[in-house]
Length: 351
Image (cartoon, rainbow, N blue to C red):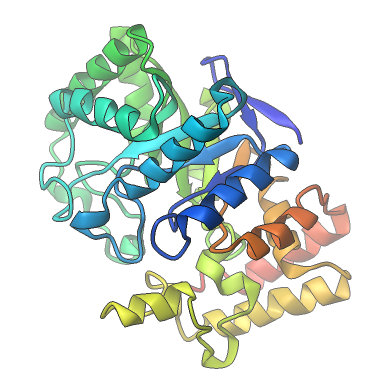
């Protein structure tokens, strides 16, 4: 497995990350630990989590459970220096804190995550989404930034970055990252860090897949010029690209089925649109023509972008992770990449 050094941080991580957002909900503790045992055998040493996990749904009583599961694994297996852990502080939420985060809160949340993870340092500490708002999670269709206060945002960034600098100096975090951010926001975080001498942004965790390519233009340009690595979440479009939801099917235990069981719409965060099935079918047909597994093709695509990109693969079960890992080193040909580009042009942004 290739390794990547993140920006100017000196932090080296595997070129694929294992996501953990289902650990403690859809994925049991024993299955989660089995997955974390399996991943390093394939060279995946980079685990991503968050204080609010597990999700689907997010519940006050389960906030932090995923970090606790990872902490138990670290405590029982040892070898903390052989893996990399990324976690996140949540933005404004009625399930955690309505105010989201500021410098004072960050000191508290970092310490809380360290306790749950049973470690004395976090490799990458991320802001789960901006306090000022975000166009992520399908909000891009009606995004309105006019209520934002530029000076208030810059003051907030300085306050947060001072806390990040304090935590880095204390050895509690090694690197700093963003999530669900915009090109403007990423640039301002970088400018402010340079201005006050705080850790620079080295990662941005945004949604990216064959079916969601909002990152491809302005953010990609910022990332290349500022040495920021994309941590691509939902590289299988929340399971759509596996094909398991085709023809309206909802497998037992799937994300959509579990969401419905908890009173949700089961629409995969707005991804199950009228156009989505035909686009999935088109990608599956292409994979068939190229004699590729469509899941392996989708993950390989994210690893061959013209910007640094680490896909976060997530598996509800050990068996799903086994299948993902069988194609983890696939390299797509120029012909395959060209065919994908044309298919994307013919079927842009299906959700």
